[in-house]
Image (cartoon, rainbow, N blue to C red):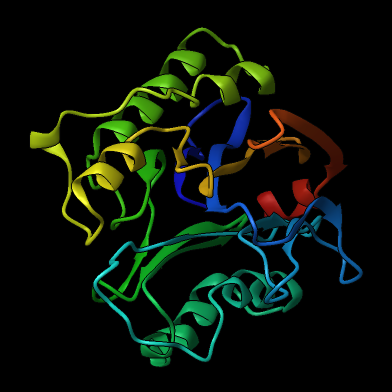
Length: 261
């Protein structure tokens, strides 16, 4: 993923509300949101075999964004998508899992990793020190560290905040509210190693760079305190100008018992 806005454990009806965009090279093959053989729901990177965002009916959730540093030409043997997949397939609690990943975080290209379950949500980046347990609240994450106030991230948080204020949890509305194509003025752009023209195009929420790289899917995840979960993914073909929607509804197993244990 490349742009996430999420509200964690801070709403009377919803435990978790997330709106996310994924940007990638258009030629990189991927499969849409699906139920994996190992029991969780996620899209699939068909090149490296991992995923970028997913949730298991046992309440395990994970998502990752790349930390953008185009000056770094180093090659890494380990795929960042495995950080999400391995957590969802495993049985380690979130903190223990991140403690293990922290020991080997230098083996991966730059990442921001969120993992959680019904008990807590945690953040780890290999561009900062330590593991952070997130307090209830509204957050944003893009291709820098958590809460870096890039304008498109600020707008994403505002979009989610307004939907919460209006009690509008329609996935279509949440998603399209995070699809602005507006770009930022040159003077506020970050310097991540891209050309000035590329940095400008990358500053949009919904990205298209030269018709070879851009936003290829968006996901809305709504997890109620009752344990009910709705996941909607929209997969874009920007070259053809089409999209494909996938929706799954499931209930977190024994959620009420977990939530009150």
